[in-house]
Length: 200
Image (cartoon, rainbow, N blue to C red; front, side):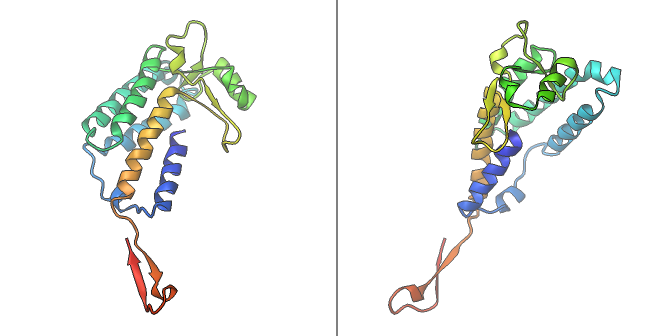
């Protein structure tokens, strides 16, 4: 869902004549930590089922990753939109921390997905997710919201995901619109006009 939010925000930014210059020029405190956290997550996803030890501690590692991510967002809270991203991530963190470092997923909501997904949730480790059960704490904060047609990709998301994506949209828009593209209207369209008129 986060990837979708980023793509949508970029498309809207370009439609509004925004550019990537603001993103390129962006300087965040400890900005280097974000790609490292993503890389560590992907490594855990890839090997937690192959390594019993990694599988056993992966929940704790996810909690640590979220804590570091929250610290990073808090340190950069002056950036417009990052407070909302912080709140969304924090809500996801709460439900994961209370449920062994796994994001609970409603099996009922996941009925819109490939049946193999629900089977993987029940039978083993699937990324950082686990099936939502009666023993799940604060299950309403888990992935319980199904998204299907007309949305192009079937997904199950959380309340935190929604808030986070609103923050991502605001963050990317304000960066892209710092340096808007100018466009030109031919003066020949107007009586007696010559050349081009620049409109910013």
